[in-house]
Every structure is written in C-alpha cells, then in structure tokens.
Image (tube, rainbow, N blue to C red; front, side, top):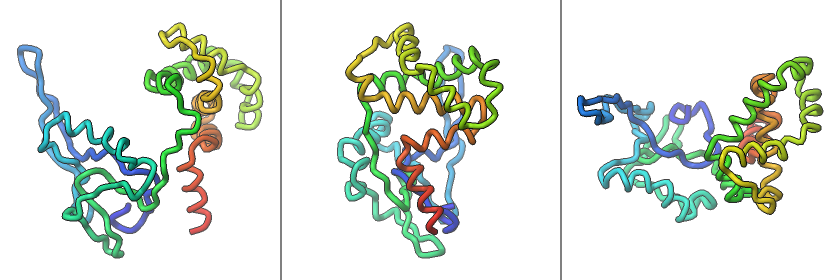
Length: 224
C-alpha cells in the first residue's frame, strides 16, 4: 500500500520481519528454522532487519530503539540512507529494518505501570475477557448494540473482579499502580468483551478511548 502510494502508514516503525521460515526438526529433538523466502515490496525493498551481527543483536534492536528515544521523537529514528527507495509518487521509503510510517505518532505511556505491563504481557486481560464472556453470555445475548452492552458492563465492577482473577493467576495487586492504570485496564476489558459479543463494531469504538494512533487515523481519513 505504501509503495504504490495507495495508503498512508500511521504510527511507529515496525519490528522488521520479512522472512518466510520453515521449521526443520532433527532426531535428537533439536531443530532449526530455515529461511526459504523473503518478502519484497513493489519498489523492491526488503523490510527484514539484518542478522549479520548475530541473533542477540537482532532482538536487542527493539530495546535499543526505545533507549534511543525512537518511540518518543521521530528525529531519533535512524535509517540507513543506502537503503532508500522511491515510490512511483516520489515518496522516499526505507528497507532493512521495518516499515517507517508516513505519519509518526509517539508512544503514549499514560497509565502504564509495572502492574499493567505484567498483566498485559501475561495475556490475562484477554483471558479474563473471554472467561467473563462465557460466564455471562446468556445475560449479554439480550444486548444487540454497543450502547446497551456498554451500559450493562459499566455496572459490573470489572476492574475489581479482574484484579482478583490476576491475583489467582500469580500477579498480586498493587493498589497504587492499579489506580494509575485503571482506565487502561477497564477499557481493554470492555473492548475485548464487546468484541466477543458484537465483533469489531463493539471493539473499536471502545478501544479508541485509549489509542491515540487510532484517533489520529480517524482524523486523517476525515480530512483527506
């Protein structure tokens, strides 16, 4: 889409994965991932970041981007000028390390705490939303639109119930950090539950409350 000048990429630079790999298992139980193909965009660029400094450096790259401030400031993004490509419309794009957005959106860390990172990285928010949906599906089946479902969910004390669930699954509550992260937890729980019941028409109207990139995308579409 970007190479053909048919779309605008909004957000932050992607990880840089452009390989097709096939697992090969050996008799001793070990294995390897064999690269059998690479993805190329229409301008001929590969977004795959190099492995030539070893696997550890490959995976450290994302951490280094964070430490260098790339997620906060577009000026901190370092791209290899030798890997420049030009689209038919004259736009400069880059290969060798992920897809560079056309419109940069800095990371929003509002409400992010160690507690939130722990529950997010463990997948507990998603898992609890699925459990809640299955437990309450008979009740929620009578709500056929987001407004009525959202109103009902607002009275379910979701955050309190979730923190107890998280504690049962190995993440003890931190009341101070929960207070800071409450909106993130609450909106994500409601959004996942609404998607389980109403698909994406239930998910995105809720998720946009905490997703700055999505709001910028909506604004861009309306004004272009």
